[in-house]
Length: 318
Picture 1 (cartoon, rainbow, N blue to C red):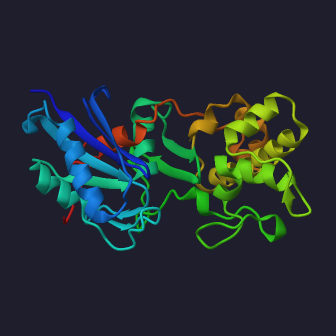
Picture 2: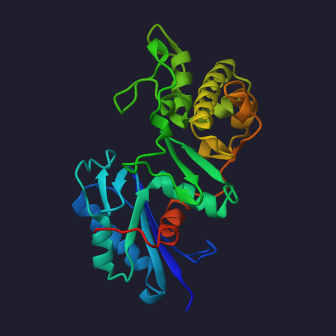
Picture 3: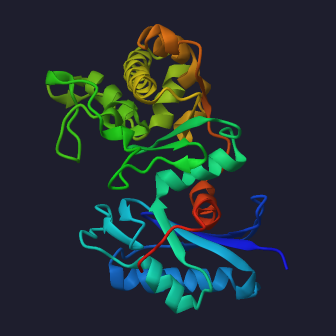
């Protein structure tokens, strides 16, 4: 009887559950919308979603299970610490809830969603055979993870990999961040950061004369040879190269994958490596590959499913 793995990705607007085999093939997938982010609503929704996804599988085939969540977690206790976008500021024991409500024969392991996406990309995507692999997801913010010797680098409080919150600039040009600081990498070099650069340049005497809603609009304007968009994109790419150069200086990875919708725009990579090289130490130049992540939007759920495979002996006091 072949092993299967259950993975859940809890997002702000929806949750995805998959069952995969060890080759990463998605055998079953279901998605459910989330309209109410309260704990009392979300936990039963997750149980229902997983129950539906597991419907045709014998529980004895489930050799591992995991959940990816958008915030800080304590994997040793199987609980969230804080999920600010959900308003969950206290611990929520999701692992124990899913294991008990689904009667699973395995522990439900947990990591941040960016870490789970990186695990999937490392095993099945562009991170294969990488000794030191870093992944950044360029979205509303910048999620991230570092994998060394086949394991996530968690840090002492399981918070390592939050590359988006290291400061790359200060002063009047620094955008304010929801974390309370200003000039964070993610405020300047995420998809939302590209929009901020454009709208700042499009503002005259306090009035924005031309508004864009998302990064895709800026990219289309760049392709149409719009001068304002090109200037904004140059600022965005300069900030992106600064953050990547810092990451290389800190960790010296051999591969960096960029995920998120913006990473699919070839313009992001035009001249990027050259700009990064100008900002790194000579010993690191030419030693890193920077490329787009290759997996789909299911990467978070697939990576969550792999937690049981990557961490079969991790002790969870759920």
